[in-house]
Length: 210
Image 1: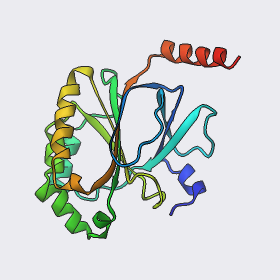
Image 2: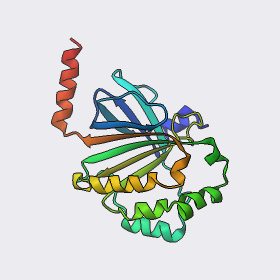
Image 3: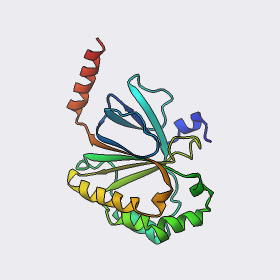
């Protein structure tokens, strides 16, 4: 487990905070497997790990970007050539996919997990087909805390016209052998709020508070 002080200073760490206000507004929230989390109106994404939560927050989830664990050199080269960065102006829709895998998955060696993930399930190949339309950031939670509620946080963004393609990609991944090891999954769809919406949200919160 990484200490809070080291994690907070980790430039590769990201925090997602769900609450009543934020720079991304929630469009839908689905619990596909396992226990739910509180439904919220908005989500904020910030770098690092904040030791305190805003007063209107219902939850905070932390993850860290790590080295590539399952990609081969040719796969890595192709990914780098094709993938788009998170935060493109046209990518106004996003998804927060929260995942936990069964203990059995973590009992496998890395080469056994690679075999299930790619040789059996073609996870990397499936994702590659949807580049650069869908940009992604995969964050590991277990690297910060083995008792974290999720093992992975997937943050993906795309233009509204690419949403059907994104749904198709998810459907393919969810039908794989790898996904049979998932015992908790939550799918939160988001839209990036414009500054005027955020200001109005804060004004409404202030008014509601008297």
